Image 1 (cartoon, rainbow, N blue to C red):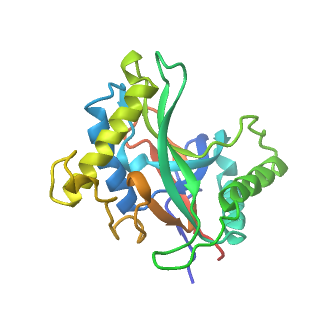
Image 2: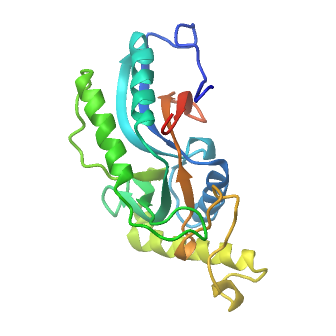
Amino acid sequence: MRVFQKFVDFAGESIMNVCRLFIGLALPDGVSRRLAARMERLAGRLPFARWTHPADLHVTLLFLGETPAGRVEEVSRMVRETAAGAAPFTLELTEPGTFGPPSAPRVLWCGVAERSGTAEGEADRPAQGALSALHAALCARAEAAGFPRDPRPFRPHVTLARAGNAACGPAAVAAAWREAVAAEEGAAHGAPAGTAAASRGPLRSADAGSLPPGPSGLLVWRADRLTLFRSHLGRRPSYERLSEYRFGR
């Protein structure tokens, strides 16, 4: 039984001498579409120079950087072995934030957190830190393989845009986010944003990874696979999926 998808022949000519690699969680198509629609609303209020292509939306777990092409197969095995020891868990996109000074934020991001419970209708259960454990397992394997450890703390997020200006500060981001969520909720109930009907509750859609959004328009999905990505600078979409492995297989 095939438990992974190999997108590129590692020995082929499509991989050059050096590859810029990272390991992460790809967003399900439904979540990506919903988040991309929200980003379109945000772009009308927040003048960031570069917005992430919808196909590139993901959660980075480990950035490896420039890696010799001869080690790609080794890295893919590392991803496979880590995925085999993991179990699916539920994630939600939380509130937005920025990296960099408020007067010129470098990155606009959306936070990612584990959510108690699994599918809609099932009893809640405490989150067990599966996302942090997955990150730690990847770091341990990478360090054992000779990759340098990233000294920065793990802050799971989805990058939405880059290169902002003074009009993209925290207050503007928070206001634009609230407006975008209200517009979504109003559209879900057939009412303009800001009306009473628009405030009845979050948009619910089985398209978002088969789970409903959480409060305040948060998007929820079931993480069940680990992906090895290659980054192509100067190309859109920028990220190529080299291999992907389901958890627990």
